[in-house]
Length: 462
View 1 (cartoon, one colour):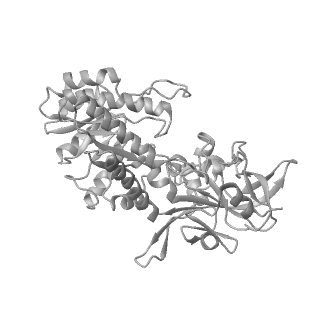
View 2 (cartoon, one colour; view 1 turned 180 degrees about the vertical axis):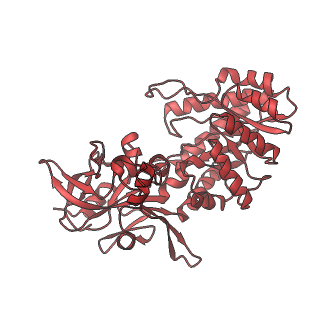
View 3 (spheres, rainbow, N blue to C red; view 1 turned 135 degrees about the vertical axis):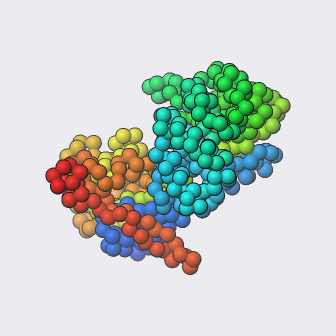
């Protein structure tokens, strides 16, 4: 029978960047993962920080190429969606690359304040896009920041009522954006997004509430399509409607200059991932170019708010197989030393798929398996690879380690760091990986595995 390595190579043409197998052991961005788990143990969450800058540079290159190909005269502005990962190490890495940021809540504003105090962002130059529904606290913080001199902080209106608060509280100039509500994709159970303002109301809102106020300047139309950026009829249809609205609004609002496409640029979640970034980004730019020419309006600067694309591929979670259990004649259960539904909640909440690879035993035969976590919940499992619809891993009685890769977006925020988790499964140890000037890897423990005393204290027993 074929080895696991031979099977995978025939299935998806492996190895592929950033993976490599040397002496039967898996390397990730040149890091020997078996040595890593021998040093730090499992379960282990890791973040490979150099990848973040690489993703930012790559996206900028895609847009630059599309601009040149289409003779597009606007500029491209890369903003990072902070809710994908709010952690200091991520924001510091992102901001090294001249990136702007998008916020979602009042607590986000406290992070902005800290970043400005540490000179990581500039009141004058950094664009801060305040998205989401504005609670009274969030709206008040926006007003406070504008009064404090954050010249490029842009409240993006999510409801008609929001503008009334700014009109009553602001006595300094404010740049504004409007988020447009979109029709959800046909397979979504609710067909109209709760976010943003109805397209039919956008121009009226500008004429009635923004244009007459000398402190207000409308500069951005936000048109995030919730499916993410996809090469589908639904996406192109909704994008065309947003582009047409931008052109019509531009004729009424000469200060309008930014077309915000939001986030949703896909990240690689399988070994056979096939998304043509150059084509899709090029098509977005082409459609904007054509529409602006037809309407006789200036081409807008393009803003994106890429979150998962920026950070997802920097992350991984590594487990040790505790036991191999044969429960039927079709496949084996591999019981892991952690919980999938608490450490990687998107697996059970969204049926998210990740790249799954063994860290060792690549020369062993392979078998069909189901991965099980250590909670008593029936949903704490993973059984489907994205490219085969079943999951195969090495068949061995030797000690086996496996990794879930490209897990760096949202999982910590959704599962929580510390706190209480299902069946009191502890938060795993998390390490950061950087490279020094000579290219050598540097490791830092961000936080240790949660211990029982921490859990008992939260529960009120200590």
